[in-house]
Image 1 (cartoon, rainbow, N blue to C red):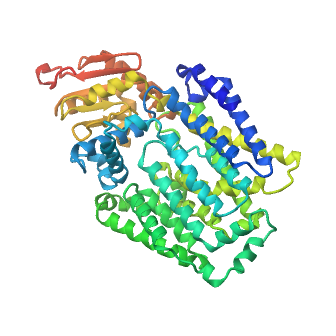
Image 2 (cartoon, rainbow, N blue to C red):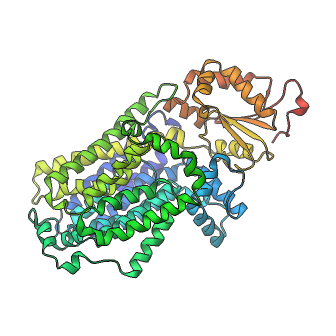
Image 3 (cartoon, rainbow, N blue to C red):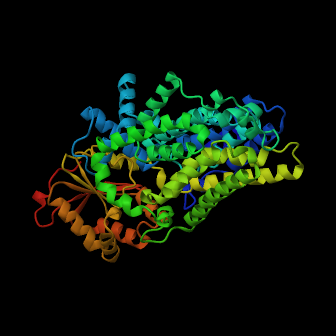
Length: 584
């Protein structure tokens, strides 16, 4: 019934109704009824004895579909500008058969090319022209693939099916951070959870817990652990599984900057209990060696450039954890609500997980508390562009979800009041998830006209400059080694202040400077203005002035005009013949 209502809701969705609460304003009420019915049904599944795993899996897959397949079905183009950027990087590496020359700021991808090279290999083998063919469905694919490692991790800790499937449901209903799009982070995160699951599965503590089950009396897991023979507690790795771990870690190290550090932090904490060291230390040594080797060779340019920033960030967890919602302008009211929703969800999950560690003593000898704490330690190391708190939450979530499941579902028989409280918690967490995951969709989705306008400016002659309000465009990085890009909102703090104070003068000066070097184009789209309105990246008044200046400027000739996108070509008022380029 839930899936039927969901399918009924999709054609009734009105994307033109999106506002400062994103997709939540476009979806019809029947969509939320479907999600509520799905949640109620899942609660019923976990009340059955024994839990039917087929039904539990069906409900979880239904949840993945309702949350992650909905944008893929509704949107006519690829969602999220960073996904478009990664498509452009794959395309460039295919054209250059490896590292991309003159990559500028995107040279960082030359230094961590694993994800892009893997996709390039896949495209060559399949004969596909572009990753656009499957990137729209990548959030669904990534979350379905993640189900395997999550089950492996949770079943390494407990045999209680209610806790296993409850943890899986909690994970998918609270993973609001949105790092599941077509990206190196999503790929490396999948491998991170897989490595963590394989390591935890090998720990003596996990083997003991799985043998007694979580439903046993308090302390039974610890007693089972102490009763294990010495060879069970000191068991090491067989060559096959260890080689698999080496391959997975190598893929992580070559694909993403942050994930290897998260992995090292997790392995370091898992190695603290003496009983775990024979299992964990070899894996930790491989992770550290591969990361240091990569950073000292392939990624040395990036590491050496940003080393001072890293050292400066050490010891400032308050600023590392901070994530500003607004920049020069004021955020939209709906975005403030969404911000409180996702932050409330983050805090509640971490708080409930901490309570579970206190109340459920059997989880303490497992690796879950250590996996929960390890990502949070990175708050002391770096701000990661203001995202570190949420990245830390993302990496702590697999452990947090199972811990919260132990808190909600371990007790049997369940009394009506406890069932009601569990339902309220699940509905509340799901509400926070929707606010965080769907709240910015007004800027994250693109219309076909926006995609066509962006393709128009990227198909201009090599050496052209593309000026835009923000970098929130569908594919402006295509042929990035051939073009310069100037997002006005990405300038220095002084530049942005001048832009707010004198938008006409700054825009004309920027265009003149770029036009002196070659053909220059200005693109203004609906999604760029939506980003400014939602996040306050630029004040709304400044955006309106810039739009008005462009529409009436003698130095700009319109080459495409539409409801969602406008493209101008710069013309030198003093010497039109030297403006460069032809109308695309």
